Image 1 (cartoon, rainbow, N blue to C red):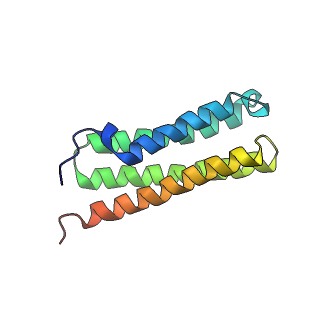
Image 2: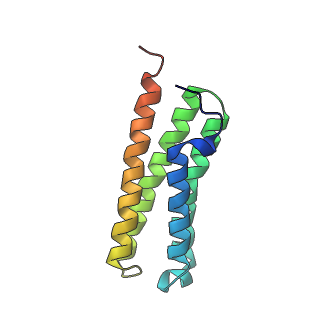
Image 3: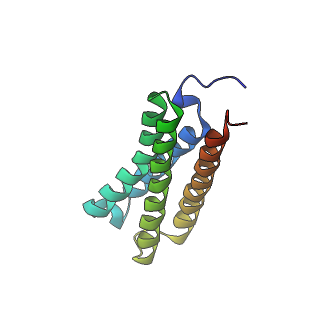
Length: 124
């Protein structure tokens, strides 16, 4: 397997960046666009997913990369929590909630699998 040279080539990073774009689109409309606290919280959480992947990768060692991937995974939980709140207070429609919730849940599983892979890589 070829070594990845840039974090931009990682699928988890690409998917995390997509989620940030979806969240920015979501927060630019409706009631959420006017609630700066909630808007700020969910956008920060979404952006931290890809930021932590990038930062951890740049440390260029497996231990730190795994630590930052765990932070990214934690941020997926924060985004899902915020989505749960936003749908309950009717700041977003259920179809947008379902779409984004599925994307974030899928990324969380992908991050978990990647962490497990890295933990076991070279340990065979």
